[in-house]
Length: 239
Image (cartoon, rainbow, N blue to C red; front, side, top):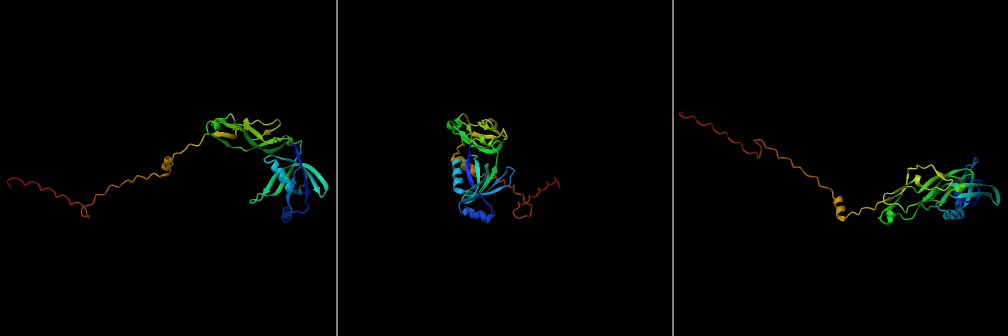
């Protein structure tokens, strides 16, 4: 991966008010950290940076920063963007943190994973692609950072999976990611539920009502059956 030259202006005054003032003049406030040096407070031309960001969307870009004071060049070094802050409403870039790097030392960055082809399980069996991992942490020299990692999926059938350990990485590129993590899978089509089945599933079952056996009423209570009279003993003959 080649470096992209970017001129930035050193900013001597800091603070929220100065940062807001820079944004009003179409500049993006930023800071450059790392490299065993003191942080450099800078302003970046918004139009230039956003054009680069659009062109290299989804990629890790290596910048060759020329730190300027007016027309005078103070220093230059290689850097990557470490963090960007966005306006939650307009999605406008509010601030950029750069990190100094050495082109001869390995770094860890995220690279986008891109599926390639149409899986057999999708084309023939109506399945769908379920992507679990969208980016992979890779370790390599800055000049070896791949634009993306392609994953061939054309041969995959229903329930087939691709794991991290099965990815083909470019020469000089490694990853510390768990090799058993699933990158993507082909899942079966959703089962169609008939309207009557859906209605039956949505209708709650009415509980069975168990009727209590009526209690027998005692003699004397209202509605109680009259007690049977005891039969008189037969009289003895001859008396």
